[in-house]
Amino acid sequence: KAGVTQTPRYLIKTRGQQVTLSCSPISGHRSVSWYQQTPGQGLQFLFEYFSETQRNKGNFPGRFSGRQFSNSRSEMNVSTLELGDSALYLCASVPGTTAPNEQFFGPGTRLTVL
Amino acid sequence: AQTVTQSQPEMSVQEAETVTLSCTYDTSESDYYLFWYKQPPSRQMILVIRQEAYKQQNATENRFSVNFQKAAKSFSLKISDSQLGDAAMYFCAFSVYGQNFVFGPGTRLSVLP
Image (tube, rainbow over the protein chains, first blue to last red):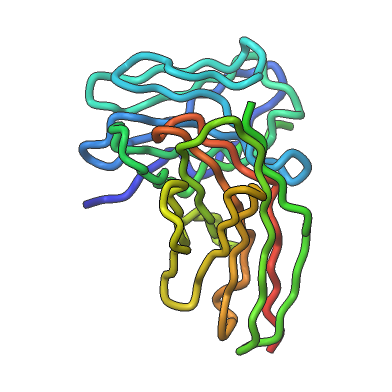
C-alpha cells in the first residue's frame, strides 16, 4: 500500500495570504489528523477528521480549518497567514476502528511565511 | 486531559551501547495505548513500538524494548546496540481508542561513533 502523501512538500507564502495543504491517507484509512510542528512547541494537534466529520479539534484559532472528502483525502486551510504559522505541517492517518491503531504519518509540508 | 512528559530534551549514546529514553504520562483512563515514534532528520515520523495498557508484558521490537509501569504511569524506551541510524527525535505518545493522540515534547538522540 502507498503511504500517506502530502502536497506540496514545500511552500513559501507572505503574511496575509492563505494556503491550502493536502493529505491523502493510506487506502482504507478513514481518520486523518493534522499537526503543526515547530522547534519551540513540538507537535501540536490541529484537528482530526473521520468519515468527513471533524471529530476532534485542538486549540488553534479559527484561521485554521480543514475538511475531509468522501475518499478520505483531507485538506487544511490557513487564512491570513502570520509569521508564526511557519512550521512543518504533518498529516497522519489511522484506519479508524477502535483497535490500537497507530498513526501513519506523511512526510509533511514545510510552510514558510515571509 | 491527558498529558505526556519527556524530561530529557537531548540524549547521546555511543554506538553499540544501550540508552533509555524516559516518558511519563497522566491520565484517568484505564484502557489506552502508548507509542514511541521516531523522526529522523528526513522528517518522516515512523512507529518504533507500541504498548497496550491492559497487557502487563513489555513490548519488544528487535533492539527496541519498553519498560511499562502502569501504576507509576511510566513508559521508557530502551535501545540496545545503538546504531548511527537510530539518531533522531523520539516522541512518546498516548491514545485512547485510536483517537486523541497526545505527544510528548520529544527527545533528540545523538549516536556517537
